[in-house]
Amino acid sequence: MTDTYDIAIIGAGPGGYVAAIRASQLGMKAALVEKDQVGGTCLNRGCVPTKALLRSAEAWSLAQSAAEYGVQLTGATVDWAQIQKRKEQVVSRLRKGVESLLKKNQVTLVQGTATLLSPASLRVQKADGATETLSARHILIASGARAKTLLGVTIDEERVLSSTGALELDHIPASLVVIGAGAVGVEFACLFQTLGSKVTLLEALPQVLPAEDAEVAEELAKSLKRQRIRVEVGARVEKVETDEQGVRVAFTTAAGKAETVAAEKLLMAVGRGPATDGLGLEAAGVKTDRGFIPVNGHMQTNVPSIYAIGDCVPTLQLAHVASAEGIVAVEHMAGLNPRPLNYDHMPRAVYSRPEVASVGLTEAQAREKGHAVRTAKFPFMACSKAVILGEREGFVKLVVSEAYDALLGVQIIGPGATELIGEAVLALRQEFTAEEFSRAVRPHPTLSEAVMEAAHAAAGMPIHY
Ligand code: NAD
Image 1 (cartoon, rainbow, N blue to C red):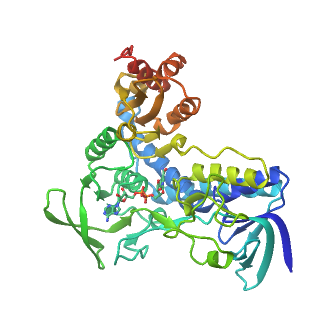
Image 2: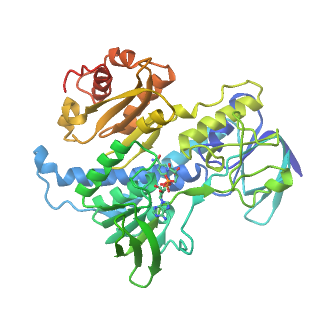
């Protein structure tokens, strides 16, 4: 039997489920096909569980320094089983929320693995062996990504972990080597170092978080080292060996010295590749480029009835980007002619300690693009709220065009960075000048004052620094 829909969506992650809800809001009959649980990587194995674990690490950290705040604690210990239990509760609560939203919006959830049959139909293979064919005027592929590894190194989730395995560990490893200092690498390095592991972080490029501003990366590296994480940038991994004891990673340092580090576990955090194999893309005539599905500004593939969004298309691999792409795709299908996304205005947020967040161009990118720019910085140590919180590391940096005083980019490292970046997103989107950004008065005492002060600094006149 064939069921007919206005839209069939493959993958119920933050791209797919958001698209399904918007489709239903626009009066489309929507089917959402998922082989696992709703919420995708983000909710089940990514953003949400990691941040839940990091919240526990933060609680432990605060407990350790409680005496400084005048709170005497004795016998405080880390209870990993309870940390994991709380993580599961957070995930399950949010997953139930998504499930009920899908019901409320009358989205048909089809459990199984989808394969495209044509530009307007797909087959779903169920766990019990049954199959179902769906036909749809539009198909949206939101199949996500999976962890990459290095040539010759197998992720066994025992000794060599992906982020999925690292989230499920039944104990805190005594020692951990992390290969790759992108978002995944630095977040897990901070998490396990805080909870007592001895962590080594190896990064091939010359800075941690290579996509971020160089000064921000330097500040983060300094802080990671203060936390006693061994950080090696410019490191070339030569060999990975596993045995009963754990792993041994041979690498060459930036200075050309051969070294070996042994650890109980290895986390592979060298990026994620598109999960597009086995989707039947050839059968439907959808072109790919190194596994990614190229799309136009409305997220349409080379086959006009088939759209693709999220980690399987060659744009930023971030949950909020996937959701925004899903909305654009569905609105375009509905004939609404939405504006394509401006990827220069997409925020990035890394939940390291301290946090890092940014939007727009870094100083180097702005100069590369030929802008004459000036930069302004305001340190959190000069912000009352940061001092009150006891979190004085980091700064807010603005990249401003010399000619028009236009805000081109905002980078934040420090307390609340991932929340504060929201106001910078609005400012860039509304094309604020640095002066306009400085005249919007923020409440005192808050961390947002540091953002305002950075804008005053762009005119050479910060008040508190
Ligand atoms: P990434 O691409 O951001 O970082 C991978 C890092 O590994 C890079 O710094 C790269 O230079 C390094 N690397 C690659 N090969 C290496 C080698 N042989 N030796 C040493 N280092 C090597 O990927 P990721 O951190 O795995 O994250 C995957 C995706 O998920 C990214 O797009 C990321 O932005 C996203 N993500 C985002 C968040 C967040 O927003 N907070 C959290 C986790 C993941």
